[in-house]
Image 1 (spheres, one colour):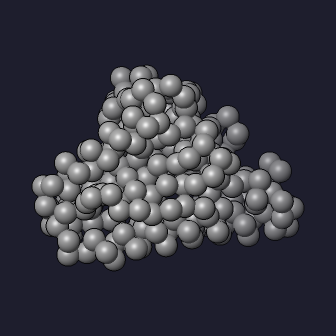
Image 2 (tube, helix red, strand yellow):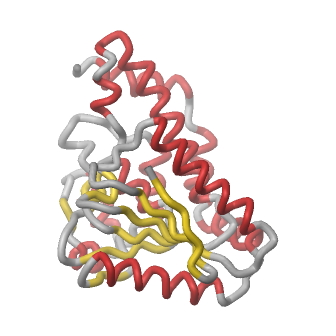
Length: 247
């Protein structure tokens, strides 16, 4: 499901295969295991960075709703609770890592896949294929408050918040760059990953204290942490019920 390699001072985590990289509990557990290895190995090492990319047409097509729906009306809510809990665990892990993080967007990043990209400190994207797309409005899937806070914290322009959330715009790389959603756009997936690895080496070369880096990130995006911490269980349950009622 994913591989983790070390290239110089940079960890390269690749979502493998040519499927849509939909985020179900088994897949997210595999990613979490790799991230925890990175956390363990990089603790106390003042020269490391992480790049996450993917094989195939998709960076990630978001939460695995087909897996949840396969359980039928009765089991859907239980599976959605599990997916939601695991996705929150995954996103929290990424935004708390004690090293710089870079998403090398190799294809389409939709819904939860877009959120996954926004969890990184830097986003690089290929120009020849792929879009960033928050599809929740189009599929009647309201975004929880903590992920809305993440979008507002990471996307530079307020008009881009609106177009991302309230127009469900599909951004290609150059449009995403102009809107302040990504940091750079590159010709191909290889060029994107190569640029991400170079950036990772540059950042790792600064030899920052990882724990200080993580604390500075947490303070910079304090509204995101506050929203994650205060997410109400009743609101989550009502959110799941609203989705289930549309099945």
